[in-house]
Amino acid sequence: MKNTLSGVLVLVIGTSALVADAKLARTSEPAVVHFNASGPAGLKIVGTTSELNTEGDENVIKIVVPLANLTTGIALRDKHMREKYLQVQSYPNATLEVQRSAIKFPAAGAEVSGDAPGTLTIHGQSRQTTARYTARKNGDTFAVKGTLHVNVRDFGIEIPSYLGVTVKPDIDIDVQFGAKDQ
Image (tube, rainbow, N blue to C red; front, side, top):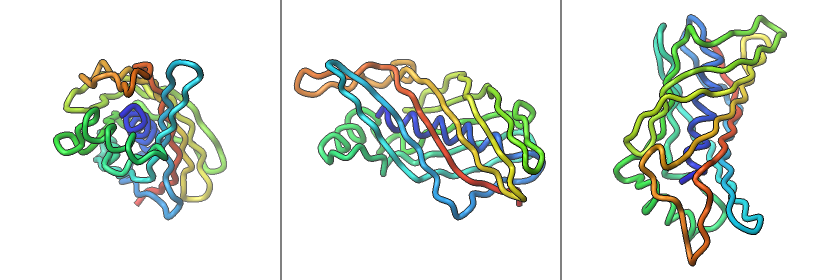
């Protein structure tokens, strides 16, 4: 669950940085969304997905990450994450909405970094958040990276625990993707 949230946040942030006055479309370069969760005794859980969609208009950029195919490398853990914690049947997506005016857009050959305030929705709960992003423009395409820190309790998600091992409620989300104006 934490992995899914991380992925969604990072993707939303990255997409927001790419959109200026036109609609933003993903390039053929695959998107990568990672969430990083930790627990006792050095436990590290990394979740990934390559699914990311962008929507928006001249005012708002919306990043949508479908959660049903988020994976951690262990099938049983993935099943618990999707069914018990994220409840993807009821809440299939994580979304981030950012005002276009909050995003800095780089000139050709340049790179910009910044913080973008937005609204993150996970598990049917919406909260204000800030995403850190870097965008580089190469020709007519953008390479975007973003990060976000999330506490799953803020979204009404039960803290994942299995056989007495409980992960921390704080997760980090990293995302990378390519996009271009249409």
